[in-house]
Length: 436
Image (cartoon, rainbow, N blue to C red; front, side, top):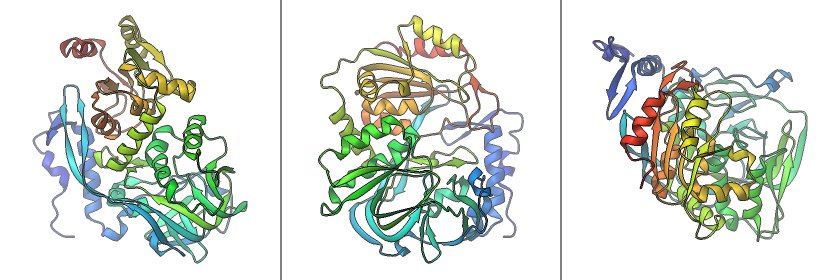
């Protein structure tokens, strides 16, 4: 391509600033420059090679075997036996952007959301913690790679060795499990709570469309999160022909017949820079969540709890103890949702009036919270464009805010950060956040 002006040139004259407005969002200049540099690199590549911008991070298993097979990337409807069984139509939908304290008052973008559908495939295989589906003829499908959003995102499927155009080199597993009929509920991050809720849980919306004349194995990895198992078991009540089968994560699952669900909802595995298009929660997913929350939450819960969702490790507040003490003095209780039983977790969030803390998948439990719940999530600058939690809150009629501070590393999506306690106090007191 000739005579293309480097996109970063639009920053000329802004070098003395720390942040600039892009639309209604105030973006750190360092992050914007990184994004524009990447776009410049992309602009010099043909569209067929964009996805190969990514030299994948290798899973330890990728060095375990030799003679790993190469596959040709195809669309899923090109795999053997593809038959669409049921469908929920997509269309133009709004993705809501977060309110960010001191930066943005929210908004939305309209996207072309694919629909959801259930299909059948014959004689295909896959490995746990991967979204690739292989056939016996050297073809492989991975729906996320064909989405436009993945031009600048990174797949983290555990069996990837290398991607070169439409040629995919995958790990060859010597341990194989052969099944007659299966429904796959595994994927790249299927054992992560937030990813499971968005990318796998709504697939159970199609249980009633599966044939009742066949015994079907619903597949999950061994040692799955007990909260994930709880939700699946609740959904399988009334479906005696469908049973849970835990599979060895170091194996290839070979199915004579595979029932597969494709969702319009989309969560990226990883990315080069922040973008609201790395997380698209469809209306059908939001409706599914709301229906299940109504079924599982205690009836007529009183809305009174003040919850501080605890977090340890990276991507957290550097002044965590100071901030926690402030909120404890305001009547908040520190909780770690993954340590609760699923029944207790649902009860606690259904009673929540206020939810605060460092942003994490624990906030996804707000699907069980009532309308009017107020939520303040602290987050680093790399992630404050994420729309996952905003979608839930908009649908459930919560008041939701992100608040960011000073990151250790603006280029690290898992950077820890510090938010001045005075800034937190100013927001809480200046916006009557703790008073309805």
